Image (cartoon, rainbow, N blue to C red):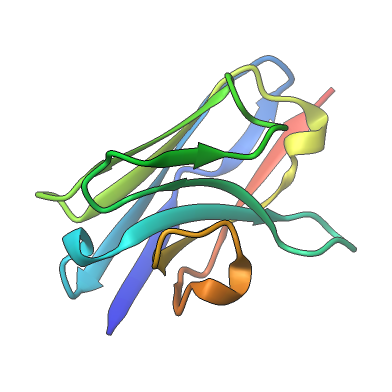
Length: 121
């Protein structure tokens, strides 16, 4: 079992930055790929970014490419999402997930509780 806890969300103006963190307990994160997903009100949960356990493979949604960066520190059992040049359409609850490297929500067995990110215009 893996327990995931996100932090770092908040309210920021458009063009600003936030860094989300996801701390894991239970099993070591090095066994899993890590993903970030988001869900806006009335919308389905969508893929944002994912990174393989060794860090060699990294994927981003087209909507965040060039603005967001996923990184991980396996020694600290923590994964990060650096979000720059934020836009109002980035407003959502952000979730981290652990599982096989994938862009699909259904592929990830472990999820955090989510952290709210609100970008004002």
